[in-house]
Image (cartoon, rainbow, N blue to C red; front, side):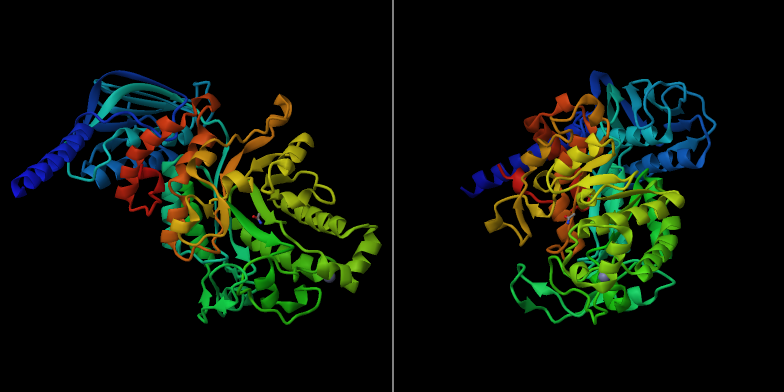
Length: 540
Ligand code: ACM
Ligand code: ZN
């Protein structure tokens, strides 16, 4: 009996080792997101320390592209290739060619692997970067010293379906350290996601240093305690919680993102979700306070006073410091969940409405957002906000993030405004992904992998012309119930893989069973990256 058990264990170990050896000899091509076109070819190419990486253009961006490949080869397999930036193609090399003559979009690339070498081409470094991500996934998901890495031969022509491939993170509810934000950006790049929506201010914490207003971080970044359990529990942990990013740290994060071709979209939330700012500067609220940084979740009646010129000056001064830190074109001003309770009673707000001929508080919010839009536009930014900014009239150039279903996105696209689709039912990664009875506490909802995978960002009711205004989609990660980076990882992965395929791959390429097979291989990379992903989908 004992001998039989021993033999079985040996057999099992043997099978696992053979599988690993197979991976090393000729990895199957299983990519996420699935490329637009993939042709398997005969044979393999072997990368060793003698293989040259040749690049036809010597620029900062091309160095970034190449650094990613070198980092992978060295970090995973201890293979250190020679790199030359003045290279023409040579036999048995990896040739990375910036080819502005190619008539494909800037994030697209062509990758050809044959036993004679590798050719990666794109009209821009962005596309080359995504080609490298694909190449990396074609290598074995192992971390061990190898004399050569085998890449299966194939011809891939790839192009993303959408230009906004977003992942969001709320650092207001729970602060996440800089080191984790950097990891999050690495994970995004690996999935070919290109837009990091960084939700920096909340009722429960202000997370970005503003030099002109030090109290925002001295007071507003710390709450005295936090609700325990579900909303309404009435139980608190009695422990202060806080944290913020200095402007120097923000610059470091933005540069790190830029090295990975990720645009960071900052969100400074207004006019609601502003309790941390009001606790710091009570004169910005309708009642004058005192206020306290939020210790529970939900929506609070105390918001910025929209009638007070001081609020405008304050917010514009904040924006003046934040704008230069973020080179991207969009700036998110929030705009969601702003109760009008205080404005209805506030003499200053009422006076403003009278002066400006505003009939409802929604119009007051719209008036407020339009002023912010003018300011942002004058400072070289486009405004984007949650779909409530449609109420009371959309600001002339604003883009809309549709979260309360698809209606906001549909309405905005019909008005010829750009939209990003993030409907709660399909894109909220704070919702449960498996049976709540066996899962860590989450806000609610139910978004299993398959449901997100089946999401179609272009609402069927839009005409072809209107559909052009859908920039893409985004997964949102609200952290009320995610206290740690490990819990964020658990909620985001593997659902981010499904999201990646929704926003990158052709609509017709969607195949959940095939995706799950590819995902089981991708999860080996997750293991090597140390991602704490949810394994509910791997149990069957
Ligand atoms: C949101 O989820 N309140 C945008
Ligand atoms: Zn007011």
